[in-house]
Length: 203
Length: 171
Image 1 (cartoon, rainbow over the protein chains, first blue to last red):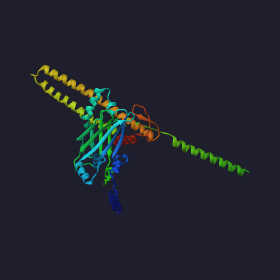
Image 2: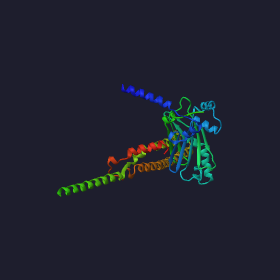
Image 3: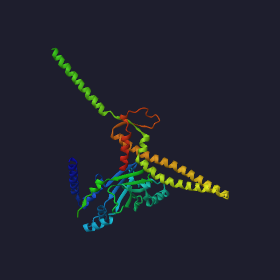
Image 4: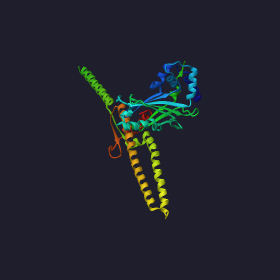
């Protein structure tokens, strides 16, 4: 009897929590996804290097693409459909205290080494990123190193993992084995509850 | 008169007892913790070490498999009475060279993993001790650093949980 009551209460709470999903306007939605406490954006530290990960939801990507342009629900739904088999991230890294150069530049002793590391970042480094779900590990199918020509103290990687529609994990961990900065493996766990709490974009 | 003295003495005794109690509690509260950690257990249980070793294992396995397959070719060639002696010598030298390379890669890989693991562990241990306001955290490595440690000050399991949780969350 008691177990039954608990079950009913759990179902009611679940329904209530679904009903409580936030609906946010574009500006507020972007802020929500970028705020670390909401679980879509993560930060970490390994030695002197600071890492940050932004999980990019379909709405986040759509709004970033539209910038200040007019947004429409119809257009968004179409874009969402195109992105639903994918999981995207931006991973950025910078030195914790030295802000005068990019990590790539700070790790190079001369131009020759800089070019070797740059080439590594542009290509092979892709294999150091993994998306780990409960029963599968993915390697990014989309990988882009944003070459900032040492004009920014931050190096940014754009990652796209093709998970498929049916096998899209409910929670996952992004893992990066940083071979260039020799920080070891950096992991960022994205939990189910945070992902379920994703706000609905309102127009 | 005697009764007055009795009450004054009682009051003084109670006040002294109260002050002493307050000081003891205050001291206990501010007394910084000390403890020890079984380093071998900590390092072996650290998830990043396991993950790095797994990655290295597949890379080293590739080198080892080349050496192994050359070894079996050499073994077969050696049994062949008509085998060219110069070719056999070259094959032998190649196997030796690959084995030396494997050994060097293996040692380097261990050094790299150790460096990465300790770089990250030191960071997490500092945070662990800092948040608990610890005075001293000794690493027991089974070589006599800690001759005896009460279980009450053994932080090994708690620290393992802490460092692995930090690892899962970007640190």
